[in-house]
Length: 571
Image: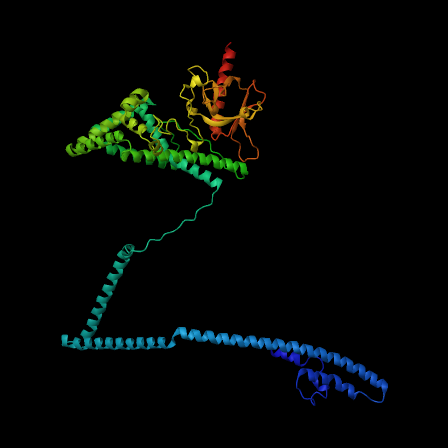
């Protein structure tokens, strides 16, 4: 600031050159500037005109410089004035903040507390000195023979006791302090995990992880079913003999524990690099699809649809199992739950009356015979199973919540009730006529829908050879038999079968996946079938389970083509 004032003070010519400035009263900056301009002009009037002109020029230049000097001085003064005002305001604000801080700190209260603490410390020091003095006075009376020795001996003994107690406390704290701290009751911390955004790649990866996680359970189930079905006669016979011998000796639980230890040992050796491929069932190597880095929008959409379909089917199966268990215990079907109720009472009375070794022996013998012999016989003879297998009868006749609401149930599959369409699964179950299948399509009695399409695939038939709207597109259900592809139109339920379509598989010249609308993402939801009798291929569109239907139709079509080729080569 001082440097800036010096610059303003000595800018332009010095004030001592203007002689009349000191004589004039300094009322204001404007008046002083006018005197600087006018008085030199009056003094410069002399008889010599040449010198007067020169003086006039000099005075004009000096007037212009003084005007510029005046403007600069005004701006600098205004700046200085603004800085001073800002400084005053800052000083005022700082004083206010200092006052508030002093009020908040409560210096007087702190000083009083400090004085109290000092007084307490002084009192404690006095008490300690008094206690020490009393001990020193008592020590000579206890040992008069050696007045100088006992105080030191007592002090040393006290120090030893104190050191011993501190060491014991430290040992206990180090040994059990951490354990005691674990029993301290603390509020449970709730951590909220961030939710990941929806991603097609992450969804596919999670489905694959779920499948890999369930693989050991599925392999174990397949191994048990292979033993029960006697897929390998020698292995099943050996397992049956070993199991029954263990039950007879009372070694059932040790045998199971030994098998678990053996399984863990084999897993350890496999993890160490040993190639152990022994298994009851043949290993099925599934092709590993390499992850694609860059996916188009249509591929992502189709990927999400496939994963969503698998998740829907998986959740549906799990929901059916859980609902059946719930309905079994909630007496939804009293005749089925009554069997379970009687069985539980029999087991309870047997456990109360029979000794545990005998009860365990009976249960082990029954489980071995049921698993190795009875189940194999019932699987080989389905009619016997439907009549005498109590567990199978209860499970297949248990209704789900949907079946309990409609009052109907599927005889074996435990799925959707008979005669009821299921739109939420794409309409695969169709309420066909009460007539037999071969009469609806005028086929031989041997023609039946395959197991993969027992209820058909709901779709639209687009016949591009026809011009009328009613003939161009029709809604219905597509069925696949051993040698025919049958389409039942929904408008033919009134009794006429003219709108139904039957195509022989051997007459098909070309079959491929088809995308009806190219603007939609994905690979499409249609199948095109070309035959010699049509100019343009027929399209079965709007089929949700298109890939499953195409795989079944194409495999059956190739089977028929191979059979015809073999017959032609033989002839």
